[in-house]
Image (cartoon, rainbow, N blue to C red; front, side, top):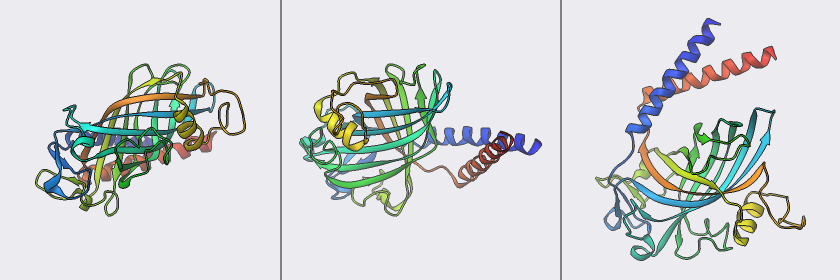
Length: 286
């Protein structure tokens, strides 16, 4: 029991340290070039890309209290920092993304991500929201792949839906080599960020959408999420949200950050070990 308590304490401390590291690691005045032609032709990003998108959530109740979920979503970004300097005008590109995440939650409480993938593309302007590819979100050049980290999430209602206009957070990391494509992302001094591991933080406000468009139903709900209910495949009928399957609209910010110092990550690893030990102990007593 003493060992478990020590590990739990280490976990609590490490989560606090990693959270603080995330808060301190946001990159400012980084440079983004949607055409991938290098630092000189890029646009300075004061802090974030502005994003909006659509997500389909599927819940599976584990008991009266807890649930697991999957989320499949598409996003796009046409400007940064709300400055009106549009990528489609300056670069002829729209930044799009596909997102697949999963995790656990508590009805009437909160949910958290346990994994997933965020893929970002530099796409031709005007393709997003069409039937090209996946809602037009994955038809361009793949410029970044982020692995979703444990954590993040947000608050939910008693049925598991996000609170109206409630904030949802997704933390992820792009590992070098291969996480970021060279020529697109740079820090302020011109160093290509593809040479290092880079964190990302997405903060979005979520609202349940009762009437998704025909393209959203066919592209995001049916094809991307593999939904088999009314409105998809040979099921017939018209799509409608249910208590466990529902459509959500999102808008918010996407930020980049530096990976925390090795010491913080090492302590975070101890925390994960502690969580695993506690989980196994509980399972053995069940």
